[in-house]
Amino acid sequence: MGDETALNARHKSRMIRKKKIIDQTIEKNDVERGIILVHTGNGKGKSSSAFGMLARTLGHGFHAGVIQFIKGPQKTGEELFFQKQDNVQFYAMGEGFTWDTQDRERDIATCKKAWQKAVSMLTDPGLHLVILDELNIVLQSRYMEVAEVIAALKSRPVNQHVVITGRGAPDELIDIADTVTEMKDIKHAYRAGIKAQPGIEL
Image (cartoon, rainbow, N blue to C red; front, top):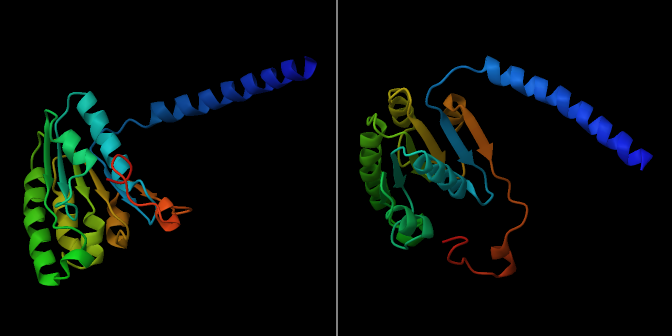
């Protein structure tokens, strides 16, 4: 009992010190503006995290826009769900993975069409959040110029947040982003012969 009491006392002392530091940081961080978030890496969860933020945005009553650059022909759970929600502009404008299309010029044309729709969102002050899903793959494949994307991001409405997903985020995009998360692939069911399943990968 004595050890437990001492442990509880040390825990409380640590939490008091921690709370003081966190409160001071919160008080100091007073800048309010839209931020750019990049989700990259080979691990699963990049788009899933972005759509979690979309749910938060809608929960607060804000408006949002989504462009999916690669996904398209096969309906995903997020598309089926969010297209039914008010306050969301959702466009799955891809034609599938590049190993399926096997036509670089066609892929470039498809991505450019999606980018034009994205630009209209990035100039809309009524959108609190814009998700550019798998845009990193487009940039990595050099279907578009990174400089063009960065210029659009820098000129967007001041309070608009943007999430960009996909493996292989270019360094230039990482440099201008406010928050960058790299998903690490440690283990994946697919490599054990388990197919992609609705509600998990689709």
